[in-house]
Image (tube, rainbow, N blue to C red; front, side, top):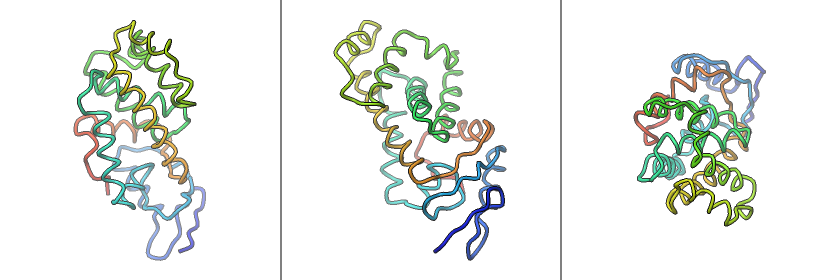
Length: 210
């Protein structure tokens, strides 16, 4: 089915206006502005990966399980630290939706630890792990033995290094999934902060909002 958008007027298609659905979703999640983006394929009126998970449930299950395992499963890194890595990689990849979402979740979880994102990223161990994550983001082959040794010097064990590399690699995939299909990303912070409260408390095994 052919689909057309206007910049602010929403999506025109037989059977309804999904621009309205997007507006309703933004309202339910605490506000925000539709960025006016045009998805490359037909999707429901949800932002970012939420639209892809709703439209393609066969892949939604494994992707949600992966996110839950990486960000909430057993690890020497706290959930807050792992969300910080996910947000950092997403920000460096210029993925607005993932950076906004996971940055907001990181802030929620770090506040429970009595830390800010700036404080977490300034921690010597996290600084070393974020440097590894950034290299993985660009070219995994650029990670050196010196990078790993530096992380170990600041308290990272093999599992922490492993989890960092896997989170960085996985979020490059998530970022490119979201951006490669042209999903829309709300502008502003309100939408991300509201959704972050649910993700921080309940994790990634919830259905996307309707």
